[in-house]
Length: 166
Length: 166
Image (cartoon, rainbow over all chains, first blue to last red; front, side):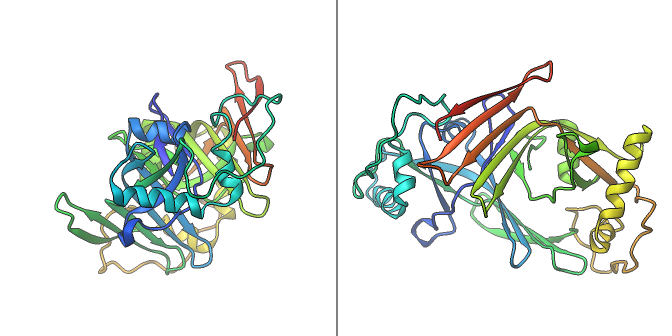
């Protein structure tokens, strides 16, 4: 997921896909609210996900605005999503939210906690990133020579597609 | 590789790693000079590569300025690199440089060429992207819970490392 830093430079990292929000086309990821990606998305919500499928040799580039669902969201539907994503994390992933702020110098005198946090109550810094696709670039590398389409969504939510040169 | 579009939004795509320039730590990729990535890098040279190694569960995020080596570069060393990268492409990859501009609407009446371009002479739009690492973020996901280091290079080329929270 590519984002923009406060100084205007790009940032990029691998995130695990956590499913679609409410069976819509909106993609979910999780993040620590103290992480660079969360802070960057609050400042510049538009993100670009690049997802490469090595078996089928397809690439999807998915751009759009993001929303962060954190502990202060009180909409009932989103609260359930927040809890569901927390429950579905591995123990190791949940544990990272009990540590000091990501990216800060590690203090070796502070031992890492080893007990997994409670399954039912997300820790305060846990948040869900929701990416709303507005532009999709789909590349089939196995084509002859390659096939590529660009899909875009207008302000009324209508999608259009155009085949483009690879 | 994440870049910045002219409108300030992030762009992201998968590129194949084409080796290190002159056995330095500079990474090489190839691109069509008419592609969005090449145009974006000319406007905003700083890029951020995210490279995930699924077998070892390690992630490297490599940020730094980029240089494009195209047909107008006349430095002998870089000219050889340009030709070497061209020669090492697959036939299918070389063929894409003989097509119409990437990302433009595809004209189905123009048949794709099927003869591979000459091995020894790069086509005019072929260029090599050289990324000079200045910041590296290395994450070991298999640590307990995870291990992460941040490396950075100062203006004198001296590297320093700090262990940070995952």
